Length: 312
Image (cartoon, rainbow, N blue to C red; front, side, top):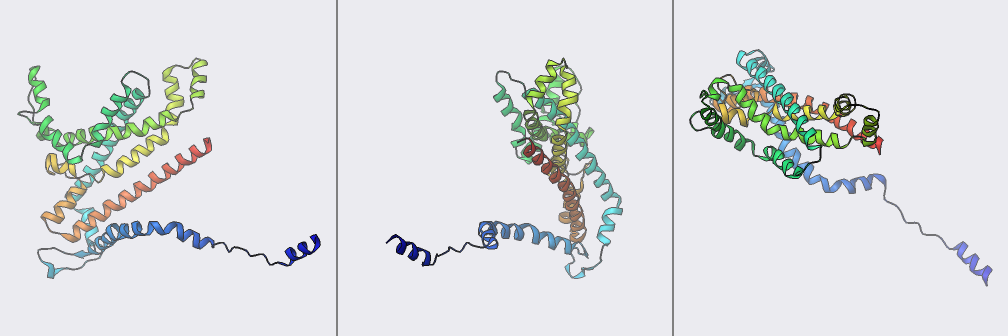
């Protein structure tokens, strides 16, 4: 009986379940992302391709029948025109100043919040709040509540101590724009650097203190090298956004008094001069610069992930 059963089992064909191929599994996992991918291509990539095409045409919307292909002439105009070169220089100066000052202030605030004290959660929430304000609202706040020469808070404080009553926007226009952007972007830098401070090796810090290292030596030889990647990440991400800033320049100075950066010049060329081709060429250059900066930012992020994976 047992031999017969064993023989039947041995001769019974075994049904194997066919596993889906690797390509089919890959498509099954990616299929839910296809609608978002299609939406992104339609909303972002197709308009960008259209912008690149328009940038090769001499196209004034007031004279649509007079448009013609000019090749790279629009790009040469952007790079050789004095006003456009000045807007490029203003963009660089604005971006570098805001990023550096925001990083320094963000580092100081991150070092403060890294310490334990009563009410730290409330202080952290208050310091993050400026970054959550809508950019246009933040610019309006600085323009009317702080900078206004008649009823602004800054002149009110100066009047209280018997000081002068300057017109902040007229006297220091670029500094006025930079101050509003620094106020808004310092919390962003603070959050990145605070994450870096909290990822330090505490055993290494305690060992340095046991060996007699001072707070300054610990900051200089341990904390600052550890924060290098986070400083780079904050600088790159901040540069990506600030180089494209339009709200503060448009709201506070309307691009006047030498504060017109490249995004505002694109706006002037398109909506005021109606030069679609020239504005498209300037916009493409802004996008190319942002892509270059973003490439370095992605490399920094990848290196941070590799470092964290190595520690784990």
